[in-house]
Image (cartoon, rainbow, N blue to C red; front, side, top):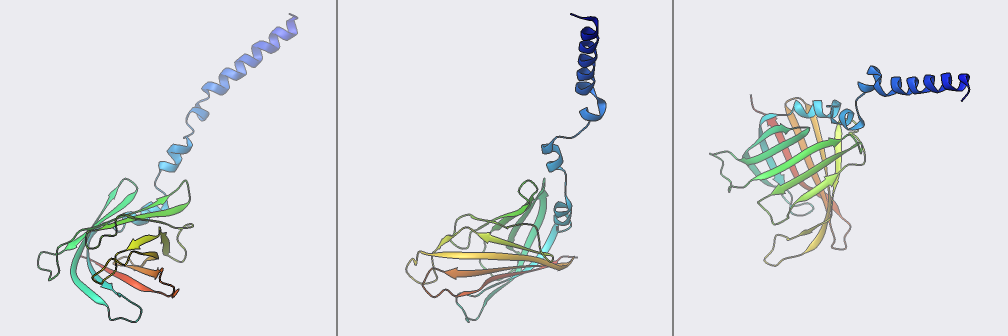
Length: 202
């Protein structure tokens, strides 16, 4: 091996070693570490923790009078980057006992919101939903997977229900969730099905 080749080889090995152990490169976070850091969406979710009074309204059909339930309480906590909500009637509420859970999270890898709800009032199973991007105009719009709906009559209707939910917060002490549905009944009509109005407990 010529002397100049040997010198060049030593230089290249030394450069490779520097690249491997360079403190600046070793300190660079991985993609997983970066995506695990709290983004602005998670910071906004943290502001919604605590106890909330809730009024729930349900419209069983287009143009029908709403069925309104008052005296509900939602407890909101963060589980890592996920906002967990557990809704129940307050001890003095004049409504049947139930538990409703939902989880809301912004998936930083996919760049969209993920949502899921579970409710013991109806046999609707687990309802997953997702958005097509980040919030727009301060509103989160998610689309649920189609669900079989039991109906309100004596027989199981079993029709598929297509629904979405809009989540907004007009100010730090109020949150609004509105779910619109369209039943697979041939009418193609969509209507406001459920509204949850939240007021922060002082």
